[in-house]
Image (cartoon, rainbow, N blue to C red; front, side):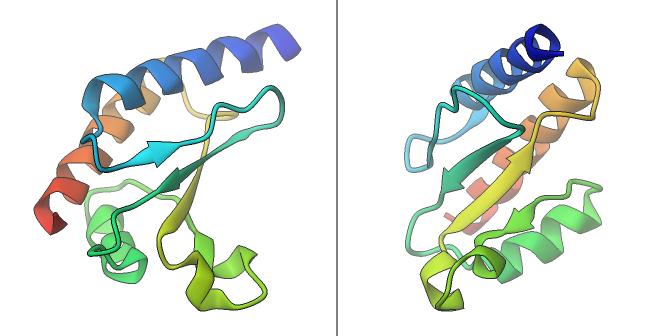
Length: 103
């Protein structure tokens, strides 16, 4: 299972590098199932989530993971553990397009 998750993580990281604007940063996990993205200060994670969901792309807003939810307003968590490689690449591409609409 570790090899499968590592392969999925690597595909997700490659897609992030390929599609995300330079204003977005992300973690490079050595384990686990998630990658954290940090958005530019000009983007509201709440508004981003609404538009992403309309495009059938789902993520966990950072607001639910911080003691002070406002501290998570610039963060999102994406999972690489379940979706297929093709769906993950396409989802990250769509997410990037949505982020660029807000930038």
